[in-house]
Image 1 (cartoon, rainbow, N blue to C red):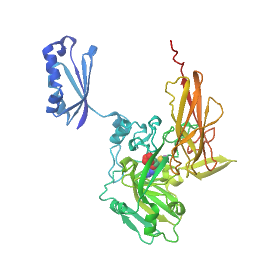
Image 2: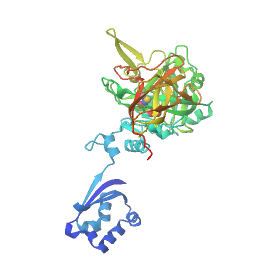
Image 3: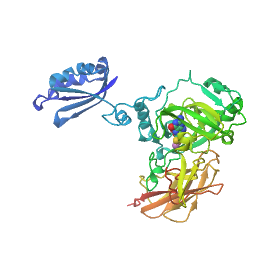
Image 4: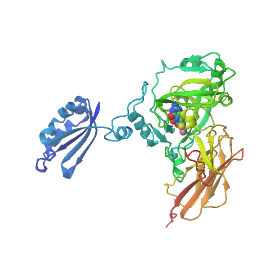
Length: 472
Ligand SMILES: Nc1nc2c(c(=O)[nH]1)N[C@H]1C(S)=C(S)[C@@H](COP(=O)(O)O)O[C@H]1N2
Ligand SMILES: [Mo]
């Protein structure tokens, strides 16, 4: 089916709806049973009365079918039929004049329009339609420890590959005693583990850096939590048997494309040092919140590296290779490191553990609030160690310790809340600061670095408190 916009116009003196019988006939023509008899679908109808113009959004097999269906209107005036696209398709393709993005590699890919439309309908905040990048809407972060899959932020560097579970294999090779080729069914029969893990993009908060830096302009929602189930990576590494010279483990995603700094087509690839890879908690996950991985989150298999920035959690995993040197792939050595200048020297540090951080989920800046009791809630996490405390300062006042809600979890965020009182109407600021058990805490100002990673500055929320409603 294709999409069309249809325009019918008539002379003011010849308005077909002016005659009750013709009007009724046209209404019957547009009725659902009649429309479906013609094999078309009406998505919307609107009349601009003073213009004597009717617009319809119609789905049909081709233009001829639309024209045939619109015959009664053509007789009453003029008829224009335009082939059309959804907004998601136009934005995903880069504008009205641009062709749809071509699939660069041999793999099948998810239709960018479909992926984008689904994200919008799920309430995600879209930053880029193609490749699809969207953050979690903070107000959607209410209550539970994990978030529904549809609300989980999405970060893609290339188009989303659609992998066939029947033919997909995980190839394990390089410096191993026994190269493996594992199917999904093989992985399902291996020992499984389930962990609740918070993923955060290293670029989360980048939009708040000043001066601005290039890269996706994430506000504060490039973070989410889910329960992941899969095979511990060590199981697979042990089965393959790492040879003595093995130093790093490279994970290859099935997604690919071209990037400025490298020639040809590259895959999304990241490595972990052998010791980190052998950490018993790195998972090869096939389920997210009890469901098979959604396609945009890496179906059928992804890496989950708890507590690390999520760039290491490679999606659409197709290969694992043990190598004897340090990996120099694009996403390892051209990006995802902190770069500062210190004493005239350029210093680089890879982005590994998530920095300690608190996020205020309630209230929202847009809420209408009144003086009186105010509940301030949010989440806090740190890759280095569990959260020790979250303190809140209202209107620049002293830090008040919030109550930590629920169990301490080593790999996922912790909910916290503070009930405080706001005495007067006007503008109030709320700040929240997390400290972890290792004593790390958040800076007042965003820690600027060239590529804009790890902005864990204390969040400050400005609230407008209205006049109390006075009883008469
Ligand atoms: N294969 C592949 N894996 C990937 C990426 C990617 O583009 N391709 N993006 C990484 C980055 S930067 C992040 S933040 C997380 C995002 O995971 P999500 O989309 O499931 O939230 O996936 C990581 N794994
Ligand atoms: Mo990321």
